[in-house]
Image 1 (cartoon, one colour):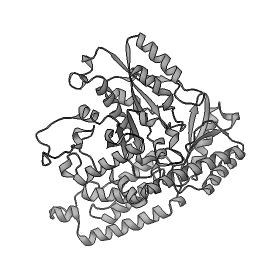
Image 2 (tube, helix red, strand yellow):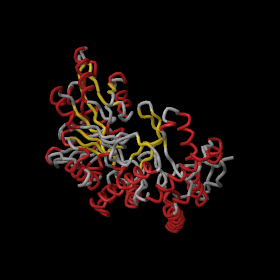
Image 3 (cartoon, rainbow, N blue to C red):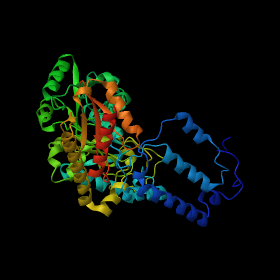
Image 4 (cartoon, rainbow, N blue to C red):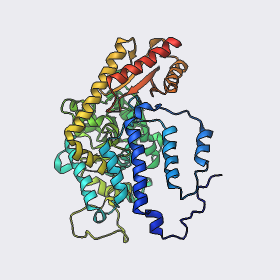
Length: 486
């Protein structure tokens, strides 16, 4: 029987001794943990990329007896074993999956520091260093995206989903300022959100959350290059206007999750001028291209978007999660989220500051920006640029080698996301899914399946700065061996 929650010999002891432990015990646990971390971080590639998905075994492992609560070594080992045995190891160089990269060591250090200091970033006066670091990063990123320096505002978020939710709320406040207090029922218009059929589903969830409903999201077909089609978008807007709807917002995806395709923002700008909608760029992944002088033109026009979503925890290899919302409307976040309370600290009264809780969806939250700030301090913006360019180069190598070994590529994107397959199986989802599962079951690599129009493809994305040409060759070898075996 599990002893989780059982009586401990710590009962009755001083709470400081119980929760802080003694310096000697802390050191012993840190040494033990550090040894385990070093083993994992140095030898991740020696592990199977994915675990067997045996739910009863995992539940039994969690519930098993782990010794008395005061057996701290055993408790620590139990958690480390669980994460080692029962997780897809996204830091593995043969993980070619979603945008879950290997964490850089600077990011790991930052998360640890944040846990120790535990700054409360809701009120500026409680964590002025943390609040100002995040303001500095927002301004720096906004500048790199091309926003005028005096027109930059934003916030760190729990992830891209919250950033997209923030964008919807800001767009609604911008178009319908009365909604904040009187609600949607005060608005005669029927607002709509437009995005491509390839956009992230967090947009649909955000429409549910803010009370517009999923029917308010217009999913527009893509063109031959899988980008949001401006002509089809305008046709839909015209039809909706004639039916009494109002185009509140258009979302351009700069690095679609499935295909890596970058929507053409310059082609949308005449429509923005004509119909007056809020243009949001969901650049959670592809936005990192702005850090590369060589490749930032891939997201040309993003400086004209009213707001941007960017996830530092994707391409910049810092621990999850570090979403970012940036806007070129410096007053919109205060108008959208501003609120006053009697109980929040007012120590900074009279200073020219903004309390983060008056500025975002969140209230209490951790110092998310430190992971990016310490990365900049340790590696520099040049180091982050090098990381971006290295993964682009590896993606180009993957695309080249797939072509040389008889595979067909189905997506046209410069980003290191490759959807590929064989013409003989592209309309056979069972065959494609079976091949994908066989790859995963080898423990040597992790890929996924993605449907593009009517074709079923295998999807491989470069997310790890440790992934090399040798890993690409190993992936191709696994695929060739499985194809031969049938």
